Length: 395
Image 1 (cartoon, rainbow, N blue to C red):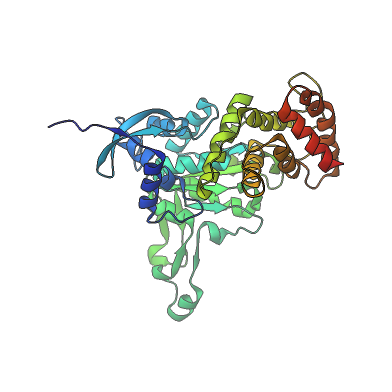
Image 2 (cartoon, rainbow, N blue to C red):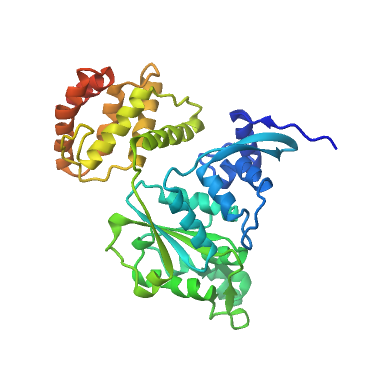
């Protein structure tokens, strides 16, 4: 039998594959397993290693999906296609390996880090690669109840018929247990301790008791079930875990992006992803991208590349904030300018990302503009435009 020849996939084909797998491409944001359906399928077809029970991919294949790799040949839509494997997570490879190993064990995974370090992003892509479903999620808040974690009832039918399995409304946890999939629990430390402790028996016994149904009183988890939780390190102390719950989670700490080059690449890639929904080309000059990443990094660290100390803002300045600034600058240039993003455009949009509810942040930004941006503007036109616009806006 003649071997099929692989053909490289282009962005239009990738979009078509994603749209066909969803049934429609007219959605604001698709889950990771839909957006990257072609890559997941290509990796699955080329995955030669054994996977844990109920996993879609082997641990090494999950790692490859997250960290990227060489393009592979796969049959997509009935045609042999060469599919590039893009990088989804730019952090430490060892951190990702530890997260994957934890999910293959009996322990739950807790991703802890500052805002904007990619906790939810990593959680979503882990669930997409392992379970093929990243939508089984609970958003933790002060108002989250135990019923939202386990199950609730259709009250009208219970009054008319009494409690029975058809009247029960399963929460995402129960759905994940029955299907043998991963549950994502976002911002778990924002839930009150009584609600958090509802997870103790679920993680330990892999079961949920339903005392209202004597004949079907327990739902047991199928192989593949586990929990990925995220916690904001700046919320620590709001609702601390009990000792019992701490023992059942394996902690993985998510650091801020270590180097400027990586941060620039993250901003470039995520900006392109976000703007692709609007069919707006996300092309920034290298100097503009470097300005964004440099300004955020130096304000966050409180020190410039030349060793000059500057006052950092009170609000956290994450890579996510830098991405938002870049996207806003592109949109502003598209709708109110000539389409070209300048240093002045970055200044207009950066101010809103940094100066929020603390008046001291305004002073910190003014100091940075006067001390750092002004000096760099003597040699770099991007920094000069940034300085002039910032001075004009800040007064």
